[in-house]
Image 1 (cartoon, rainbow, N blue to C red):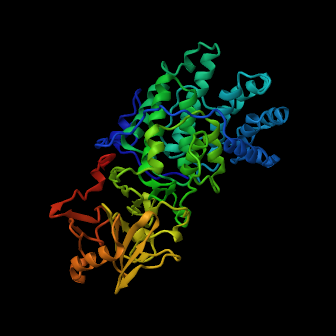
Image 2: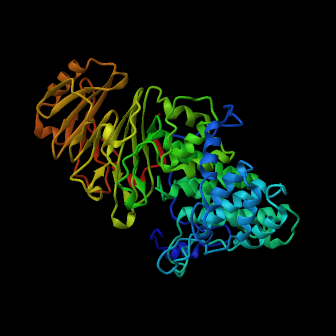
Length: 537
């Protein structure tokens, strides 16, 4: 499937040797830097990783699987990781065909998506191509001559059969062009001096660096995508592991950004942010098993951290790729997954006509914004605003969440998150097993894990959630009601006891942040112009 973004004339004219700017803008970085420092000791082996290898390796391969997109290449890679059925793996590789072309599949290009297979075939070549007892010489020749179908410098920014007018998706660009680059690199490192394969001379290196540099600067167009982020990460893992130092570092930097974004908007591996693509995934309610989480759980299995949720759900193929590649995340990312320190408030921009991510954390909680859809073509799935506590919940029904109006996520503006506060144009959903400490009218108060106090105001048209730590729930509830007794004012304003006055517009247009001001100081509501990562950390 293609993401419908048409190049304008300026973009088309800018396709030069150094690479096309596929989004045609540049975001400011903000005041929160992506951490890259690595001092942690990681284990060489992981029982969890080994279990994933066995799960994948034991999957069957049928004849028809050799002729289409699927998990064949991952099954073969898993068997090679275990040195299992090596002869049969070589036989199967030599029977495979180039069953389609690289790039997005759509009605005019029904045979697209070969790059999904190509990417893993590239991994197999680089991991085992110099081990003739694992990848036989004739198999390696077949890989290089036939199955690894992309080489040279024909860097494609646009989707097949679109006359060069529709931008290709990030995952396809990285899978196709990353595999092309890595085949070129392999051939050159193994003695072929033909300039056709020289990634510096033919421009491939600079174009890949430019593409990933844009992702590092502007974030991902397909932010938090289910399923495509999994394939973007896999392509980046290949480049981080096998590319030149320059390309490898850029891939690592992009991975570090993607992971840092996750850490800031998650807590204890609960993660439920807005996402770009796909609408049919809007019904997902699991909090801990998105594809990004699966990679992270694989990496954590090589650390000394224990007692985290290791369930990867349906994302086992992505957990497998995380397990078998050498990338390990930065120190601060690992810490931030579980330790929110004294808390923070962070705004993440995703550029024009996208949705922001907003996170408010305390010592033992995190509020995650649900974002906003920007029209059908945006392919942005708005999620409920969620409260994550230090507990074992893993489903939306088990956490406090709010959204509205109604049940159609296309109509929501769930950007109403501020420091210790959330609001929306709909009710607050209370976990079934959570009993109120005290209730009065539409107000109620709850005590969560680690003595986090949750004060809720809920009607069909207005939901408020206010979080306190280290306070008496009965006393703070009384103070909240005293400061906010007028319903007409409450429609657009909340007063914290001994704290700021917040103004909000839960019916804000979809290009505006729901939050309006703090203590009379107007907030920057134009999230299209927000920096990449900004706030108080």
